[in-house]
Length: 428
Image (cartoon, rainbow, N blue to C red; front, side, top):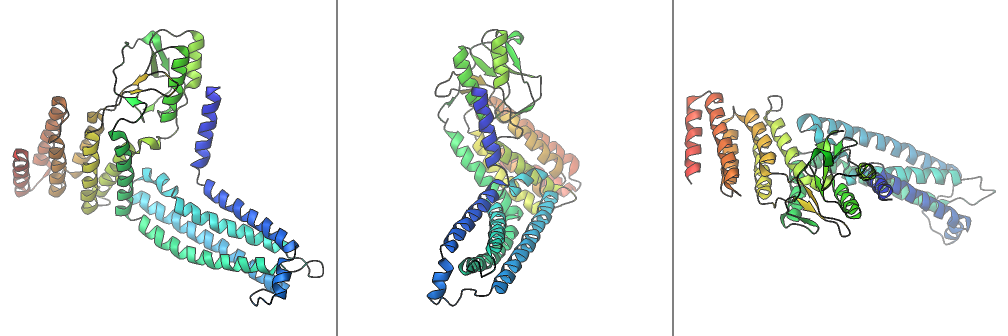
């Protein structure tokens, strides 16, 4: 039963996250409006308004057909042009920023809303055109035609908004700050251990005979913890998840360790319950955000892009996010409302920071300004270490940065100034 529920939950999440979801809602809404107007016209709405002397109603069947045909053709052209431009802009953004940002840009709700309104108005105009019959048999739906004209004018205004919106949203500063704001909100949520999440060390040892292998490859996401917690309570077993939240695991690798050897029936139930996500879960977007911003930084430092200003600004945002991550509690347990306490491997600060600093060093070691900015980032982290091990790791990163500066900064004056910068800020 729980596996069926998980299947439907993932299906609903897939539908809600689809790029076609919002446009489909708009199209259905406009189709419903067209049906409503057809009913009102059948009961003589336009005939009554004509008797009242409304001058803006269309009285000619040929004029109505021409207007609707023009609106349909114009909006189809507008739709094709708008989203051809989006694809071009997204392609440029992928080349200059990071390909991993493409899903985030495509899933922009405002772009989907514009697409939905365009398609909805086209559908509404089509159905209105179909409702026009020879006047001997039925009155002309003049008021519905007038609504189509108003909607077409609104679409023109929407096109102007769309041009302005896509022009601003594709700017690198806007993208990086949007990612930063989302990550900051998520970090604020995790800063104080949320309900059902806590810090606890697993009381039982991991043994191979107690393990459950991953039946498929995928990412560890939040729904998995909820499902496993309920199942562990039902089976009266302790549970340890060997992979940190948001990480990827390959098929056949040990994923779960139980407090005692499982029976074949229990083993099969746990395997059936494990449903891994195909993409990284948005609930961990502070991790994804740090990776995305670091990728934007590295791309800006590459010889093909050569945009040190963007790299410096991105490192500034990275510094704030990493400082916040440094203060996060090392959550390592979860218990749902009706489930058992399960344990998992916490994401250590060292595992987060070391790959990022390595990338920044490798791509920025020939630029003295970037090297000084990376040095400030490491020194800022050294001001708030959580333990001696973390401080030792940061000292090693600073030594590695100093060594890269000695080897990669060609000018003796740059090397001297960089060394003085490290000594000055390390003593403050």
